[in-house]
Length: 250
Image 1 (cartoon, rainbow, N blue to C red):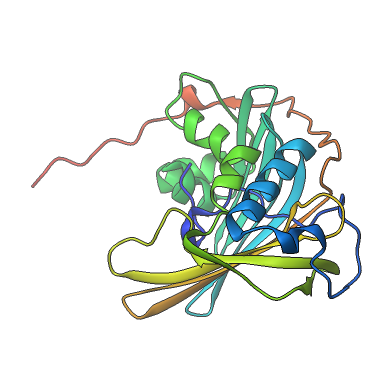
Image 2 (cartoon, rainbow, N blue to C red; image 1 turned 180 degrees about the horizontal axis):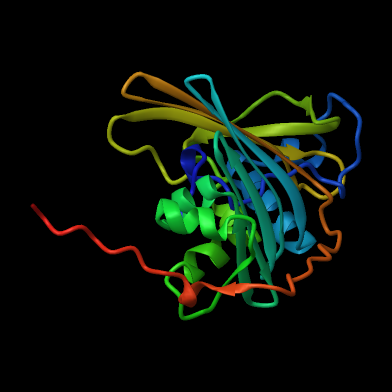
C-alpha cells in the first residue's frame, strides 16, 4: 500500500503522550541538560518502551488536506486514511493483514481497476503474507516504521521549552526525516515531553518542492494503552481479486 502524506508519513504514528503529564511549565527538566541528539534518542527509547500509541497525522498541500488516524504497536496496528475521494483502512492483527476502503481508496492505494474497486468497495480484503502488498502494508502500521519517520535529520538544535497538546515539551529541530531529496527543501521538529517519560508529543514539518509547500503535523496520545484490535470475520482474499490486464500497445 503506498503512502499519501508528505514525507511518507502514515505509519505511521505521531504521538501525544498519555504517559506524560499535562500542563505547560517553562522548565525543560532533565532533558534540558542533554544534547539534541541525546533527547532524540531518549524519545525513541521511551516510545519503544511504551509499546503502543494512538496518533493523528494531518498533511496540507495547495489547500488540500489529507489525514491518517490510527494505532500502532510493535507488531499490530491500524490506519484510516482520508484524502479527498480516497478513504481506506489498513489493519494488522496477529500477523494477519486486512484492507477496507471506498472505490477511490482501493483504486488509488491498492491499484485495483476502477471497475474492481467499485465491486469490492466496503468489503474487507484479507492480504496473505505471500501477496505483493503484504510487506509494505504491515510495515506501514507498526510503531518502528512510525518512529523512523519522526526523527529530524542533519544538524540538530533545540527549541525553547514550550507547550504542545497540553504538555510541557522541548523540540528537536533539524532537516527532514531521511534527508531532503534533490529539489526539495524543508525542516522538521519533534516535540518531546519534559514531564515523565520523554515520549514524542507533536511532530511538525514543512517542505517545498518546485515551489509547492507541504506541511505535516502529527499528534500522539494513549501511549502504552492496549490497542484491542479485532480482525474482521468476513473477508475476500486479495489473491482472488481480478487482475487488470494491460492494454496492448497500439
